[in-house]
Image (cartoon, rainbow, N blue to C red; front, side):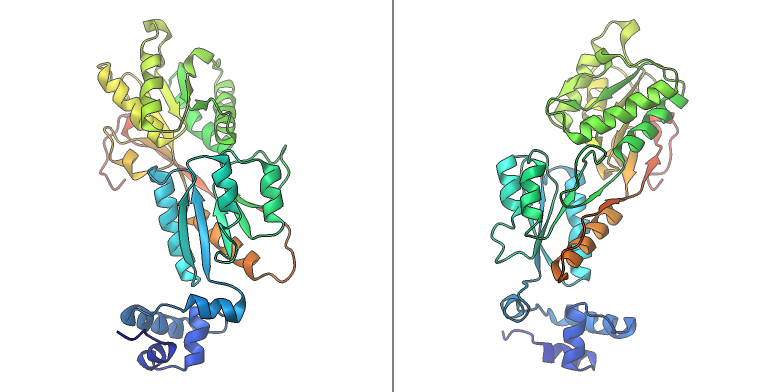
Amino acid sequence: MAAVTLKDVAERAGVSIKTVSNVVRDAPRVSEATRARVMSAVRELGYRPNASARQLRTGRSGLIGLAVPDLATPYFAELAHHVRAEAAALGLTVLIEETLGDATEELRLATGVGASLLDGVILSPLRVSLDELARVADTFPLVLLGERNYERDRIVADHVLIDNVAAAREVTAHLAGLGRTRIAAIGVDQHASATSRQRLEGFQLALHEAGLTYDPRLAPGIREFDRRNGLLAMRVLVSLPPGSRPDAVFCFSDMLAVGAQQALHEAGLRAPDDVAVAGIDGSEEGLYSTPPLTSLVPDMSAIASMAVKCLAARIVAEEPLPFEVYVAPHWLRVRESTDGVRRPISA
């Protein structure tokens, strides 16, 4: 079957070939009605831009990379979904890679795996150093996701994040506001990652504001932000003497919280009657857990939009742009795991 051409799309949409080209390249000065008509024809005919021809003409392939630690984690799977959608709206294609938190792999993917193919990369780093990323960002379009302490760390690349201290503080304040007085934290990791440090900071701030004392026994260490580590950490907490056990737990990810709820079930305990449980991520798995999980929800669509648009602007910039930090919004979604109120699943 012959490849669909710009001419085919133009004839289907009733516009000129140049108009189709402008829409595919996301050029300005095309009306929304015309753009919608052209994109409808693109979808109907299954048109795919010729990446090789575009690269020869513009020096760009229209291909960007997204590198995340673990695609099996619902948070990163959802992030990839939103990034792909945002990129498609700009006529970009996304190559998705998994780093597994390995510093060497993070650095390799940050360079574009071979910049002759990728125009730029969105990277969620865990281990690679800022100095190494700085050398990349000076010569290759790079946007970082995740947490850094920019009161201490210099800005080495464009960065999209949420305010983790404020987020953790809000979740913990919610638990304290329910009258819980022995609030545990699951998420203090052995790598002392920026995410863990900042969420612990927000947790401790909220405890202090509620007149509660931080007890290190209620913050068992973990290795990863996954279900298994949540299960193991909660087993440690429920094995404490009755007077020392927590009556609430803030988990630094929804996956940790799902594992923690399983440990409560094993021990014959219930959330929130015995232990209120809350997480961060707003994952669908938390929504469908039993009971549904209270979670701090990052605006994933905003994170993806900021990252893709920031990268696209850097790709086409003719002069170096200053690096910026972009903070995405978040909100607390209270569910049955903390307040005991049963709601329709859509809530």
